[in-house]
Length: 357
Ligand code: NAD
Ligand code: TYD
Image 1 (cartoon, rainbow, N blue to C red):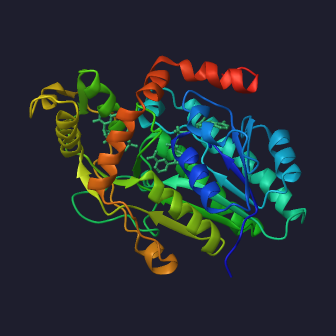
Image 2 (spheres, helix red, strand yellow):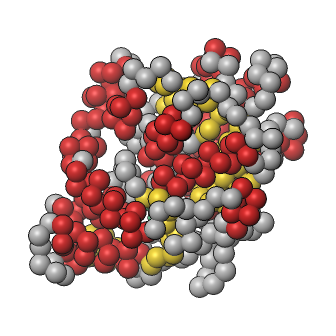
């Protein structure tokens, strides 16, 4: 029977995917409420959620997933029956220059959340419960020219980011195996869409093209990623939350592989037309730079299990999704300039008191 959560604790809901998920979930589940627990790192932006301010189905709590007392309080006070755990340090390049925060947030933070969730679930305060860990295909490591990651592929993370996510995934597995806790784990490919912080490839390209800045392409530009629209990811998460068997793992992907250089050329060309520049003008900004250390060559997801078991498949074509995303960034230049200038952090402070670390 389908699980019907009434009170969600969403962690990291002020970030890119979490914010898109909250918008999508609240729109589709008017009887449910969402508590968004986010400590507002550089990647957390309450401007991603302004349309929900004052909505009785939504409340924001500024706090750290590593704060056990706060997590316990919110779980019981809100009678939470589902934790959807997005909060993380998420950028591979940052994990190479500063891995420690990745372990603290992604591994230790997840451990605190799991432990408080276990106590809450075992207290019997709610009749049914799920803990959904949002993870990444990067935990599987890197592929050669052929083949796909399935849920059976051994974990072989290569970056400090993916290693910290793999550590968290194993803790989630352990809480299911050891305590019988009803956990779920999704592993998704690269997302794109609105509210994406412009340190990641696609929003960085759009931002730099608009500003006629160089477009850094790492190495030979032939690394491959599978791209999925963030709203398709949000729907997949909701589907898994409501209908997957406790203890299960699901890959989520778009069946949409692109070499980096092909994406770069595509975004350049789409923006030539939109910005009224001559055809080929933006490609002149492409700059090949030193490769990322340990740069995974190829990610490709086999999402057959999700399609066959739970009847999910993406609704966006890439052509539609990338065009809409570019148009969103063009229409939301104020959001972009606030993110790049850091002004959004003042807004976050002003809205909710407390400092933003
Ligand atoms: P993001 O960096 O945009 O957002 C992360 C959010 O977590 C921010 O709002 C930040 O303030 C918050 N946060 C960080 N540390 C916290 C802490 N200690 N306590 C509370 N909140 C904290 O990340 P994203 O791209 O939205 O990714 C969300 C999740 O999805 C991550 O777990 C990531 O590993 C996973 N994922 C991302 C992608 C992708 O393409 N971006 C793909 C697959 C999986
Ligand atoms: P990114 O968006 O950082 O996601 P991930 O590393 O999690 O896949 O990078 C996507 C791909 O684009 C990856 O192969 C690295 C490459 N890349 C560049 O070539 N230049 C850039 O400036 C960035 C940010 C990424």
